Image (cartoon, rainbow, N blue to C red; front, side, top):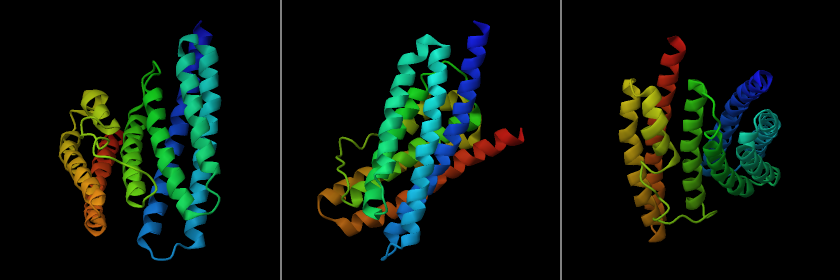
Amino acid sequence: VRQLAQRSQEATGQIHGMIEQLQQGVEESVTVIERSHKEAEKTVEQTEAARLALQEITEAMRRISDMSAQIASAAEEQTAVSDDINRHIVIISEGAVETVGQTANIITATSGIGSEISALMKQMRGFKVNIEPHVELALAKSAHRAWKVRLRSFLDGQSTLGLDQAVSHTQCDLGIWFSGEGMKNFGHFSEMKALEEPHKKMHELIHQIIKAKQQGQTTQAEDMYLKIDDYSDQIIALLNEILAKIVDA
């Protein structure tokens, strides 16, 4: 029993490392997509950069799949969670493979990947282990970025998004984490308390953007999206500041 518990803990630790790689891949993909959208001509170099970033995501997810399989064999009660993770990994991998060089396809696939990453994060919370602070913060950032990709895809006409789907700042993945484990583990940091305001304003703005887009006010929607960047940068910066304080402690 002790050996099984040790195997489970070791495999979970390796999964934490894979999540960090996944976070980096997601951030690179989002950066390339947004840069491509702002430029009139999408260069071959940008497309290749996005494709490579998605390949890194695929590889990281495959390695997570191997680790989750080890956990399933080490602890039978975690089998259902591992199965769900594997299902999300397959969808993510297929989405990345389909992005063969076309920027439009990359935007579409990355939007889908964002949704699957969100689902994967929920499943990762099902593991009965203590998640390291830096990994927990990385998951929070990924949850936030996944929503941002979803909104960008909607404005580009690559997906649909209704007002009923634009949940409040307390109902999105980041908001659920914030009001639960986030405040429990990091509520003593002033940056954590400061995070709620830009997050709330961002979701209020998302509602306005969706409404403007639905009414055909594309230019206005795009102008408001630029403010999303400001709020998003504030959120990421605050999470990074919390991480820096933890590392320095």
